[in-house]
Structure formats: C-alpha cells, structure tokens
Length: 215
Image (spheres, rainbow, N blue to C red):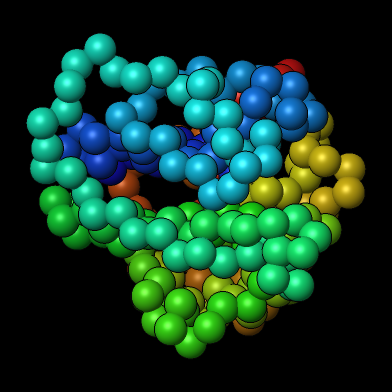
C-alpha cells in the first residue's frame, strides 16, 4: 500500500490490489500555498461540501476499469462543529477496510465534535488514522491528541494544519500535537516526506509533507 499526502486533508491511497482512493481533494486556489491536486484515482471520497475538501472534478478516472477485489467502505455521519452542524454543517468519517492489505484506514475529515461510544468503537484500533489538528474549523492539536489516545491507531498522520508557506492563517501548525505525542503518546515519530510505502511497524506518528507545495 502506498500513501501520498497531496496536502491539506487530501491523500492518495493505493492498495496492494492497485485500487486507488483520493480523500478530500481541494479546488485550485482554495488552500494557500498548495498546487492543483492533479491525480488519477478509482474512487473519490469527500468528507463534506466545502471546496477545500470536495473538488471531485480535480481527480481523473483511470483509463482502465478495475475488476476487484474492492475494499469495503463505511461512512460515519458526524459534525463539522461542536453544535451539531449549526455553524459549519455535517462531516463524514470514512473507514476503508482492505482485506489484501489487512488494513483498516480511517480519514476523519473536518471532525469538529465529540464521538459517541458507538462511533468510537467502529474506528478504535485502526491501522491508519488521518486526523485534523489545526483547530478553528476542526478539532485542535490537544483535542486531536486526546481523540487519538482514545482511538489508539497503529499509525497516525496529522492533517489540516498550517505549515511554512501553506495553509490558512487562522489554523495552527502541527507542532503542539507532535510535542504531546512525544511527551505522552508513546509513539515513534517518523518523518515520511510526501510518500510512504506501507504502514510503519509499531505505534507511530507519521509526519508527512504536501507533495503539491508551491515553492
């Protein structure tokens, strides 16, 4: 399985079967400092309707038809804020289960609310968790750390943060999240660059950098 961090909350996952999934593609110019998504994927999954997360038209379909096996995809309906969507609307958590990879992959979208025990149980102990940490529009670094401890994934990747030269001014960087993991999280911290092959062994924090960063 290959994991590519396009930027913001957009990831490309290519499973061992060759089936590819793009999560939360953003529209051109919608995220400061990031270039166009420009990928090809079998499936596009969007957590909500905001243009920095749902630009399906920016993802091209493959020239060949995929014949399977297909991964199992489950959606958990949540909220983009702490007031049941009154400020920013709904949000979807996406769970992808790939039998050939023996992996459960979870993309939290722009989660902004607490999870119920039932929702938490569905994603607890997943193999890969992509979680927003920047605050303002989503949960912040501390909330993300607390939620990560409850989910207890094998590997976690922070997303939806501001970095040097990219991201929204109103959201934070990922530094506090990294420090909380370093001090209390009990995880190995790995810098993965823009693309990683396979999920690292053990409990890890995987720090990835956007491949569509405008230099």
